[in-house]
Image (cartoon, rainbow, N blue to C red; front, side, top):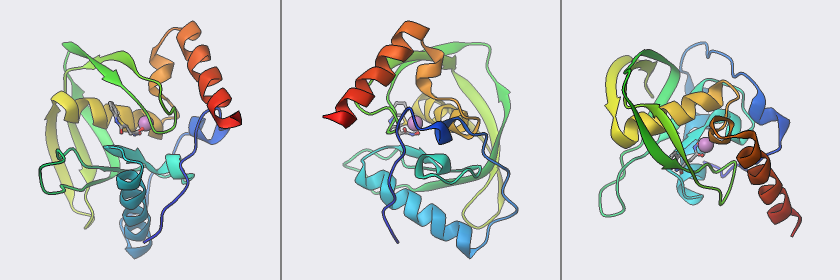
Length: 168
Ligand code: GNR
Ligand code: NI
């Protein structure tokens, strides 16, 4: 296992559309292991492969609280099959936009399909934080960041702030 560097704005690779993965093999599991380790170290609750520079449709997540046992989750080629009309706001952050937090409105519930760590197809319903996180991560696969859901003024300010932090 190895820690990877996390890309931050305005890195143009964060805008790439990630490509569909051709099945789950040991090389892909090694990438997912690295991603999980990198996510825990950050720390974060989700990570998309493009955030470590790999434009593949792969996500890792762990929504367990600190007082609970870890619950690592792996998503290969995830698809949203259905999204509720009803939306819900959530104060989001992103490891690729460090120290910026703002409210994003998204569908409250989604139905998704994906391949798991063993390459087995899964279908699931998500709500609450799980629905927020899976939609945030799937946005990354399409080159979209949570700040892209904000006004241009807020987005430009967020990018400027991250640039300034990095320069300091
Ligand atoms: O660690 C993370 N926390 C978070 C909080 C609210 C909504 C979404 C997230 S995902 C984020 C990690 C990350 O950037 N994943 O892409
Ligand atoms: Ni993110």
